[in-house]
Length: 485
Image (cartoon, rainbow, N blue to C red; front, top):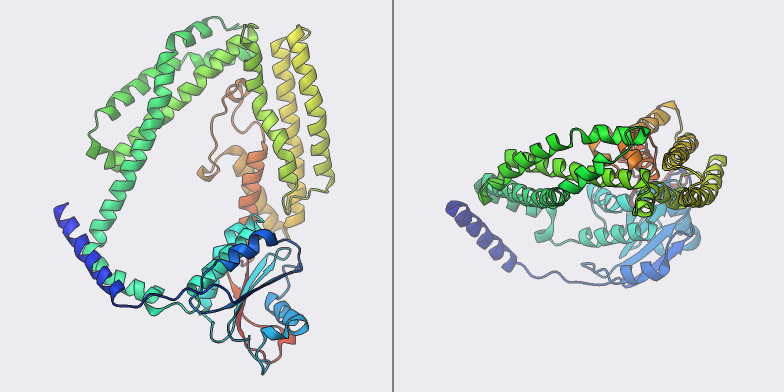
């Protein structure tokens, strides 16, 4: 560790010396900001102050142009056509280049294309133009048009007329030289630091859940002892409970093991894996003891049956509340027949839940019947979401291959087979009785659709750049390019 500190200290002094040997970069805000939002997707009240506050290395005029085209359009050609017709001041006097001092950020939200164009005294390399466009794409894919535009302009300001000592080439060279001495040590330090931080976070998660389970252990056993085994729901929850103590003993052993670790041991990857096993085991028990308590309270109509019932309704209510946001997103076919069916079901479900809760309260129906109705409603929603998924896929995919990519991601999201979907154990009776993939929820629909759309966009060549200005461009050769997102 002493050697590592000394080496890092030397490298730090080298970089301080380099930084002191060069002049500070000038900071100039845009001399003008022109917004031509022909697509009607930008919030000017947010965009203008944000862009006007961005600092460039040289005085620069910023132009933002949006229009609704198609994926097959040449955005470069469209930007040039618009400039010739509406803004000849964007073009050089000889008509062959973009005007000096100009930076254009162009966006086609319908055709999902983004472009960047510069005067000859502001131009950057093709890779840097890709960098500017990529800085905006994550936000643009999520239909955050204003924020995406700001992000693209900000990245452009960082790269246009960038001083040599801030360039990637200089930094790479400097870091490559320093890396010969510190790469191994720095990587080791970073891995150990990240591992230690992850271990502490997982340990805190496990301790919180384990303490809760331990405190309620006797109450959990009492709740389980009075759950009616004749109930279909009760019997399944009791099956989970029969392994409860064995799992608790396992969690106890893991707790003892991880708390015996010294602080430095938390920096080792094998120990992080053990700490995470402890946290997962304790969290699963913490969810299960809550479900056992709710099952007992609801099926036996105990004093706390009402809040227990509300917790069973919560996942379904959350889905109903999230439907409109889902249907208002771009490419989710909000005006389709399957979308109308979802809205109609949502409205009817609100009435049905009120009636079911009222009947459960006055004893007209049993708790088991109420759970059956809730299960049927969630199953019906799952079917409607699957139908709507077919509509969305048909609207976005251009061929069978693209449709297959999207269906695969939808299926993976529902099944929770991919780690990126972050599926968790639902803390409810239905979530305990039925497997995680049984119900198709709005969050899993969103996850599958977003990933599927991203994969299709990538397959269409979203990462490639277009540099020409099409047949109408003539001899125009201004610096610029566009790409899909």
